[in-house]
Image 1 (cartoon, helix red, strand yellow):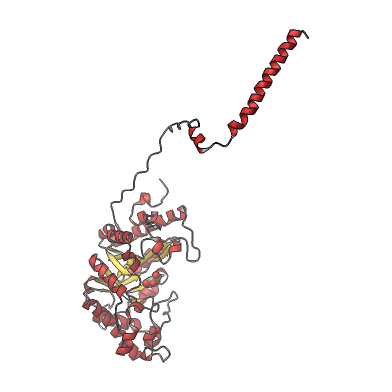
Image 2 (image 1 turned 30 degrees about the vertical axis):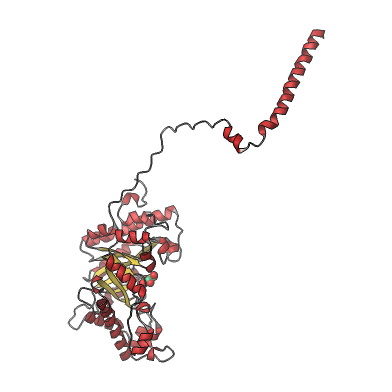
Length: 409
Ligand code: GLA
């Protein structure tokens, strides 16, 4: 190799080695964990390319209807149950007064809430005395111009046992039929008298005189009312209610699983007549604790069948749980959409039948409005979620089909 060539090669080698070692020493600096300040001064990220078609901002849903305006077009009051929590909560107040014009007390007109033990013992008769919560709820209804459904007088549940025993002492014997009939009459009479004396009676347009007395197999439910008075206890209750309730208050028999008790109810209500054959009852309350897998045609058939008797038929405690009784479904988007469709179809079918004159309905009551306040909260049965945001079911019931969860057409 010529000397100059060797010199050139050495020089190139040396150069490349310097470059290499320069790289080696520079490298750690470049990969050192940057301090936040260093990060901030790092080459700014390129501004993101604007997307070709910008995402449209979702149009806010314009809701022009409320439950009271929708049902009002058909002469039907829109109702909710009411609790002491609801009247103390601002958001609930706002929803109720905007959406509803009828109220049913969730608990505070039930037998256990209105029958006073001490006073009954002292008087030797059943004594009706409303507690402070009941009074607050009544006052709230008055202030907010609500119509009220009374719920309920004669029931097997949430009823104190002591009312059925000698001296109101459940260690003693059950009283005779005659004594129990007297107690029943006194209880019913005082219920209406008390409301009158307190100045609330005019708000009431309906009252559930008897609740849940029949079973799905057509037999009467076992209860202390049945045991002490006998099989005519329901007739007796309606007879007394007719005697003491003002004429403008409609008297109701109220029950659940109505679609499985259709014939029983159909036959039974026809026995609630006076000696001239006039009805002692004005209407049948369908509690309507339904499931998204309940068959709607069956339900409508029951409505029409009872409606054919000429009595009023009202939905009194509606909620639609996800799934079935045995198989609760989770509140997924898909299941909530199914619920939205169900509410749409249910309300649609009812309003259609009211319009056609097949059903006389003067109120449509939901057992609450927000899932978190429902007795079936784990089944997400109502119109608003826990944050009081409207669900598909809200739009469905309001007949806003495009927001009710139906597949897009
Ligand atoms: C029945 C009663 C209601 C209420 C519900 C559960 O449907 O009629 O008053 O107690 O059960 O909340």
